[in-house]
Image (cartoon, rainbow, N blue to C red; front, side):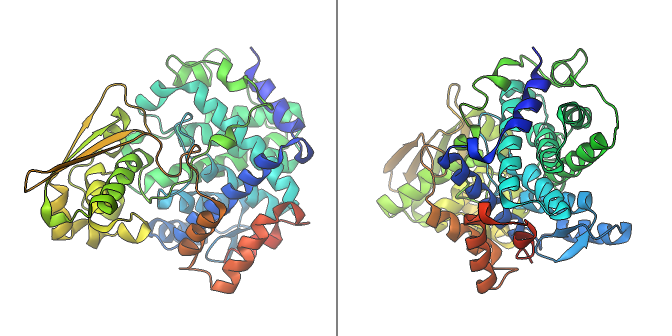
Length: 443
């Protein structure tokens, strides 16, 4: 099965006119969400380290670092923007692909688009093509790829970034296959680093590598043209019980972008059913932290695997602690970015409540599922089961909620008039003659 060629050919043939209206609108929602979370991450410590490094490296002024207005080389801009996009762990997620598809893709294609003066329609084409390719690869690689320790965002994300950048650059079929080959041979990213700056570095480096792969392929750099299915290739080396068929099934007929999840809470997605349940219980039963004896959480296996930090000491670790997230949801009734600070995580009141949280993985539970039981000091018990948390494609945020999230995150770096113009520009993305009309609003 020539999967690499099939995906490459699809990416090249995909056109704005062929996309259903709901797919184009969903793509714009992805741009709005991703740029918002990246601007929200612009002042995170990792951004400061990367910016200092980029300044020392130097480079031609080809593309913008969002939130800062610094111009640097196209690959370095993709690196920094991609890392900032995942710095808060607040970016979109494709559950079946087990990763964050927009974080490596949009920074790559916008950097190349700004460099080359691409139109808004070209950016949308590149995004949808890249998204469909990377998420299908992620689905085909399957759960065991992630379970073995691979950060799927970083492994499939390089393909999405290469395809998105390659689409903007106008690669032909052979060049696109080589770009995907270059992306596949660089695929890496280990889950051991979750909870450190290196997790968001993964999509940044994926964006960098995707841009580099597309440029090198355009200039005649050679590589295997069957990197996904070939012997000793991507699937064989990194997969386990992985399958080629899901990577191409219904390609161009069913769109994976419609299965994207937008996070309403600024934490690991696996914690969201628990957060949802406790916010519902807090509001329904008027529960207060001082009344609680125990919070018992039944969750999916991957929740404890990815977000099982029992003693978080930092804001970042708190995002990967279902214990802290449960305590936060009950205590505050919200779980936005302002609730994940070092001070909040170490607040004695929060620590005391967190220690009352018990969590266990339940075989058969879906990743979107949790059952939470609260026992009070008076012996009363309250229980709620969540199967479809807010943000899931079956329970999505509306456009107004998406805008509110964007404005709250971008407020730290953009004044209100510029935020308003940027929102309007994204909703009218297909009308832009030059993507620079968008990127100049990002700082």
